Length: 155
Image 1 (tube, one colour):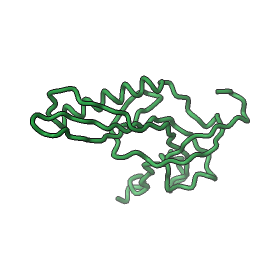
Image 2 (image 1 turned 135 degrees about the vertical axis):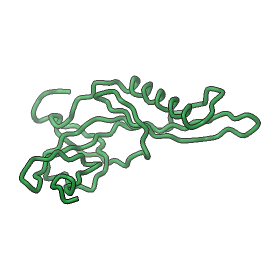
Image 3 (image 1 turned 60 degrees about the vertical axis):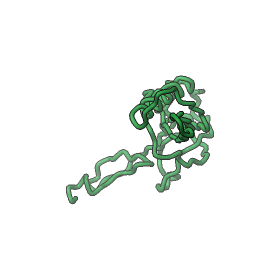
Image 4 (image 1 turned 90 degrees about the horizontal axis):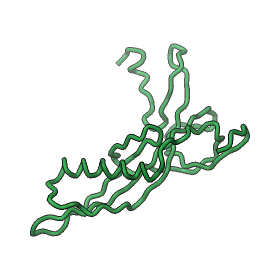
């Protein structure tokens, strides 16, 4: 990635209800993987389950997701992108470890299941600053948002 101030990249940004066009945003890299898992069972047909895993490409942490997020392409300055520190191969290995841990917790596994990577996508989550009710700066996650009622003590 060049450090020229005028360079831009096309990335996939997770869809958000916020209007990001007028905001100075910073984009955080994630890799979302969708697995199809076939669990062998004695004297029965195999059980087929699906799992989405999101891997943080900066810290390397993987966690189960409740869905594969919708995203859209945008063009953004390279200065607004946080550089990823983890390769996609290492992220896939971390995601498979989380899948195996979840399978051992959720199902009785006597044989190693067949795990197939169905879909993967590098996506970015946007963060931006906004003013709070008391003129303090608040960092807003464009996916999770912020609850201002907790900040001002009203509920």
